[in-house]
Image 1 (cartoon, rainbow, N blue to C red):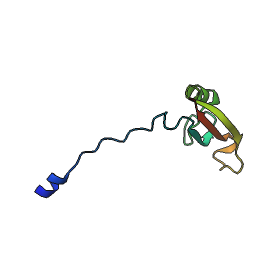
Image 2 (image 1 turned 30 degrees about the horizontal axis):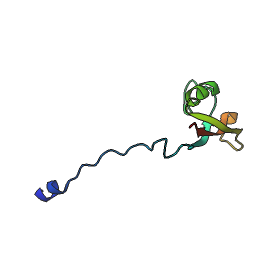
Image 3 (image 1 turned 90 degrees about the vertical axis):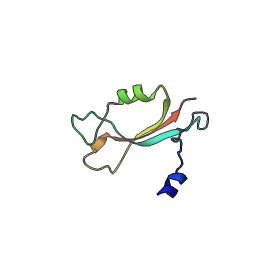
Image 4 (image 1 turned 90 degrees about the horizontal axis):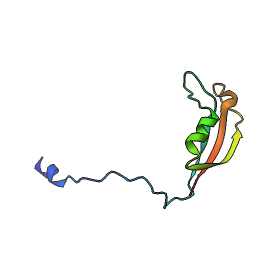
Length: 85
């Protein structure tokens, strides 16, 4: 036991990547656009998403998705956002 205590090291928590290192980072994925009273899926109104992301990101692409699962219906969208400088 004494040997284990002697070899322990403390590590600092990892830091989030800075904006300077990734100035034009992309956020891309499937988003469920449509308010749902219960989830999953947990939806959102598009206007709300714009309000939340617009200060830091600009929308680059938004398109409908074909072949979605029935639970997602026509509400699933593919969106890409680029970080603002």
